[in-house]
Image (cartoon, rainbow, N blue to C red; front, side, top):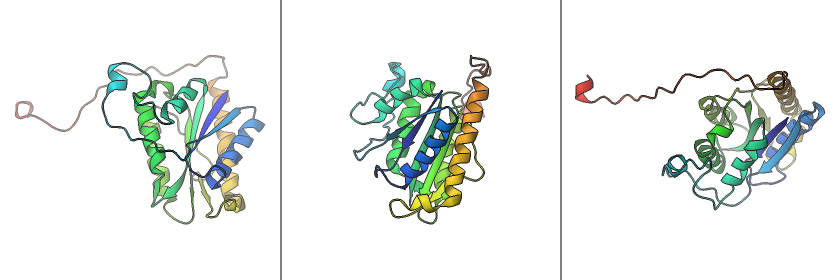
Length: 212
């Protein structure tokens, strides 16, 4: 079993990386493979709602000039997903949001029913708001959200300070233990026994006069 961890910080060895590394090390202690992929420093374009990925059944975004499709391809071999991000103005890194929105829309079949978790790293405040934002797409993709002993938050400003957050690091290890436990339960019988799903019944709240 394998967990893909996405480092949504432009700082390759920053505090977000430290938090995810703590998770990865604990996963490996539980016999679960872990791979950390950094989002990098290059721009990540936002979704323009062109719909080409769906119309052409591509399984990837039509735009192939950034990291989105390369990370989407890694989802084929991943049994679970953890996304980490620094907190900017009470929100996740904008590049992470762009990545998740395009990846889940164009390659959403690759994440269905796979356990997921978000990790947020901040200096002082805004972490819970960013954490909530990052968890919402998981719920729309039928992904079981893995919890810990507290919200998955780590504190630190300067590079390396996250390691000094004793409770935060413990929270990361507990998250890893819970993720490993759930994965082993899911794969216990050697095959996935996924829940039966009703056909999607989409609707919106705009009504034409004839429908009123």
